[in-house]
Amino acid sequence: MDETASGPEVYGATAGRLLVATPVLGDPNFRRTVVLIVEHEEEQGTLGVVLNRPTEVPVGQVLEPWTELATDPSVVFSGGPVAPNSALALALVPGTDEPVGWHPLDGGPPKMSRLGLVDLDAPPGLLAPAIARLRVYAGYAGWGAGQLQGEIDEGAWYVLPAEPADAFSAEPTRLWPTVLRRQGGELAYVATYPEDPTLN
Image 1 (cartoon, rainbow, N blue to C red):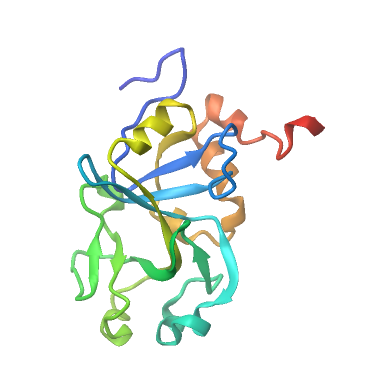
Image 2 (cartoon, rainbow, N blue to C red):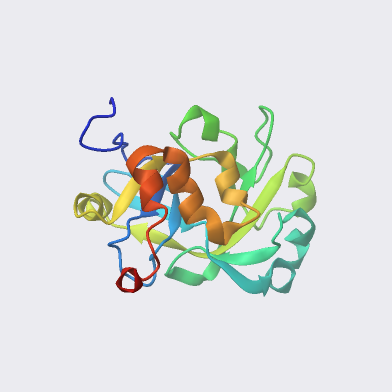
């Protein structure tokens, strides 16, 4: 779809796209978050991970075998409010091979095709030669069928193109304004929205 005078280009929610919280989204679980959609099925719903909420917990404290492969900052990220005691990992695998224990995001845009989910029960040594970057998340974000679209329609989320590097940002806490700024136009202006508009 072409960009119109009424606002930024509209993207559908699919695997490999970003959900970026709009300033009106006040839910503390998702305020100013950037969520990567990792699965999206019309009937089953949507699963994603929050990319910009690093914790203080080192990867080595919970998944010691994966420490060497974790991208800096080598901490566990809070992936979302669902199943916070479970872990999942995203890895960037250059080239064309699909190493055992790694599964690319289904149906995402071509530039996101080398980003995928890692089976944390697989031996890290098996994946180590293939992985360029890896990040571990505790929990995830989930929406039932139709629920996410309802929130998008209410103005809670922007659906935006992702870059593979977004999942491995060296400055994850700056990801929200960074992603908005690179869109240009109206969304670049949103990036400057104050944390507390009442202080403006």
